[in-house]
Image (tube, rainbow, N blue to C red; front, side, top):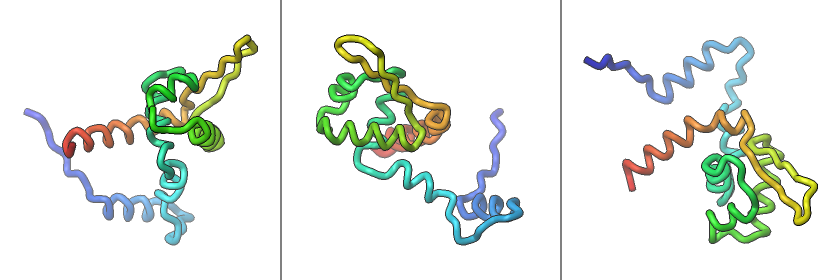
Length: 124
């Protein structure tokens, strides 16, 4: 028989977190950095494709996301790299080869994407 746990609602989780932090700023929403990092039309999809491909090259990403322009993909990749979610590795080859991989910080988003994936399946 499977044991069920009581799952607190979002308000309870937030209050527990605020009560357990000594120098907590009640005017700071811990979700703000999450929303800032993941905002934008393409960031989530590009990040998800890099996760799925493990080592993604620019051409692979353009094929995986056909509606994104090259300029927007370049901008999005730079933003994800600046945010510390992916790394860019350039190889000294001709023609030049660049690969994008997920960082440890980016890997910490796996459970978030898994929950979003489950939600999408449930409500497709």
